Image (cartoon, rainbow, N blue to C red):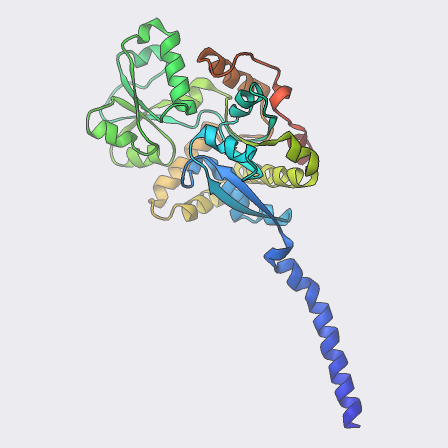
Length: 330
């Protein structure tokens, strides 16, 4: 009788163990596909909120992906990291795919993260808001270092406008713009969020929105290579699916999006972060679609051609593959 009881107990344990095993596997990170994403800079930036939101809300995990960020420096270095195979995707200025394609590298942009020049001009002294290029005449403008998009846009504006012949660019690392104002090296400093809102909370003025000035502009996108796309279409689709869901979430759930942003940047006052996110949504730098707009892409190419970074302006489809974005939004 004891022997029969022992056998029965053993069968129950085996059954319970086999029933629980699949659940453990689903909860384990071992079941997720590990993906490395090369990102501009050396830290997280609020303008990339749709990407972080997809991580924090579990949208990537729902697609079976586990994301690791590899900070890769300036925009050109981000795509170089992808080309070397050190990351599957890159997040930075997408126009470097067009630059590299002229040199024989086959990169593709598969999604939009920031649709608009997500930079705002901050001033220490009270002055009128910048409404057109002529209002920048005679100013010393603090920008990120070349060949960043911000530097390129300001340089092109100066080169193309005779009224700005006395306007100067002062290059400084990201986050150092306010220091330029403090030490008198610049009259206006171009800043990302939440730095612009942080400066505003300390009495500075936000007097210029590059987002409003330029409209739709391919400022930040997701890049990869043609070879990776051919070999890993399901993974590419899952990655874009998560981003599309994140962008839709941000547009429809601003309070929850702000809460996530506040958690990502706990050292910054919550009111400052909230104001920064609201400004990004209001100025439409958080895109309404994960697809790269033809208008925004062509404008980015036009600027790069004018400053000599590319030789020819080609159709958007040459460097942009919106098929995954279109499928994700159906």
